[in-house]
Length: 430
Ligand SMILES: *Cc1c(COP(=O)(O)O)cnc(C)c1O
Ligand SMILES: [Zn+2]
Image (cartoon, rainbow, N blue to C red; front, side):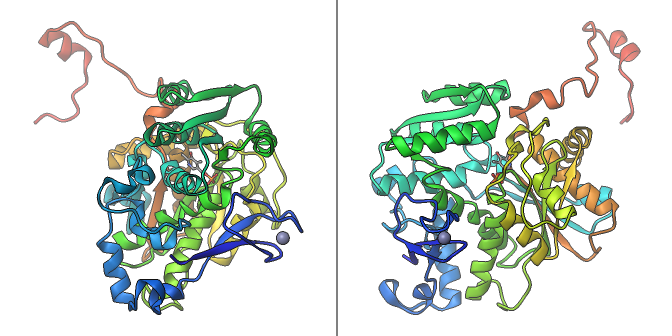
């Protein structure tokens, strides 16, 4: 395995691969470090060239564990049989990348692809991060999974707990969408609704993680959890024939997904898996709801850090007022020539409708945010006509049905042709 240790993102102090997440010296966040040269230059896995490494990836399982060489698990890739079924419990990833010509045409763009991560087991990209965190939690000997969630993470932790036979505790803000609450409780988790917003839930879980020997996937296992998001970059690149797109539009809550997609492209680029290692990263565009846009505001103001806000938006899965990875998201947006924009609740609803009506993909409010930001960039003329753009859709529309309630008409009629003809307008007569 290429994974070597944890390291502070601020002062570079190194730590062992344990359930640690914050630097003892400077309180900076810890990140997983690898020695990828081991993959190419022999070591335990034998000598591989870049083509050999590509072939090894392509021969892997149809889930995120095809990228096990780039993930923070130490026991090696799961066996193809059921031997390591405890790790693959609920396989995530290998979601469709769909060319969206009707959407592109509507926006005046040449080439748009939709990465539909609603096609994961619990219908959001969170299954990627939870798969990795749960696998590492297992390796570290934890019995209980837990999380502080804006909704989708609770769904995923509850389901992975059930698949792995682990007990779970999930903490959510008490005002979450009913669909997300129901789709979580059904797995037999301990569902704790906290009277407060996500930032209150997160503070509570940080306190609890110091007292309980539980694997809080996005608190004490956060360095491992975060690595799961890199698999979105790996998949996009692999699905494009081991190439990077020119631009990615990605939603931002804590900023972890956004920054780790950048890290994923970086790792493969440096290894030469994506052609010339000197080729630039995709322009990374972050997407937030105006009702919770600390990263977009800091970007617009030229700041390096985010001022915390109190969230008020229909995009509840993105409602983190104090984003842990805000500074790193700002840095990536600037360094890659991208940006961070925000859109109103009305624009979010319009984004959901636009994506649904041009691609057949029904996304939750977070996907409405992402689609609306793409529309905004296109309308502003920020996107060159020659660009290949990937729109990252992270969640499923059936989880946030209130966002589309009342946005279209249903024709209720008696069961007769005359009732149909008098009530329903017929646009196309074929
Ligand atoms: C959690 C989540 C995100 C963003 O997560 P980060 O905290 O920024 O990693 C985006 N979309 C959906 C649907 C989510 O549930
Ligand atoms: Zn440090």
